[in-house]
Image (cartoon, rainbow, N blue to C red):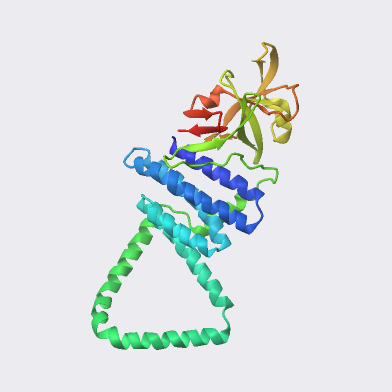
Length: 336
């Protein structure tokens, strides 16, 4: 499986679902589940890719995905999220990404401690401070003869290591957390008409990804998200290996800012043999399961069947690019 597409698919799913969810605990559960996806599916694939020529691009894709999940967790300030990030850092096979995740975990821990200090009463704070001073004085008196020489020798080395690491990260061009939060804020301003991608990604132990589908009258209805012009709609398309091109019903165009005046004219052959006029338009992205195709041309066709049955056809222009297995009994697609 293409690791960049996998990361893009998970990021897209999480972003769309977050825009629909307003309840805090539900958002936290979604983000923590996404961290589990990263550990169980993404990290093993990244470890296998080590040493390849395209590893740096894969590294960037994983780092972008992790940041898109960690930043909302930091903004929410939940203690459990700090522990989850620390565990994720321990499981990370890449040193640079591990340092980044550890930084996020430390930021969340520091933020939580600062909140607790603000909530503490002045008397309790003073008593606690006095106790700490007393304990520190006793420890200093008992341990100074043994610890002082080592500490004096160690401090410059620690400072040099930290300063060197900071310079290395700055040279690598890592984005400051405040800049990433600003980017997340801008993304959150997309139109409220965006609908989340149905069919949650379920990573089995072997690292594959499963997308839930619906089987109606022997037709497989696949959840698909179409993004265009900063907006997105959730559709159900019929999986059709006989269709050369992915086709959408004309009514979908009214739900997205698609300029039909610039569309190309074409002809489409329907299942009953009829040939009808159609239009070819380019959309920003088509998202199916873990895969994102951006941009992609789709066909707009007229439809006179029962309203609400489906929104078009998922054709071979998408399907031929991926390995998948259809499980009709369990109504699912397994992506390899």
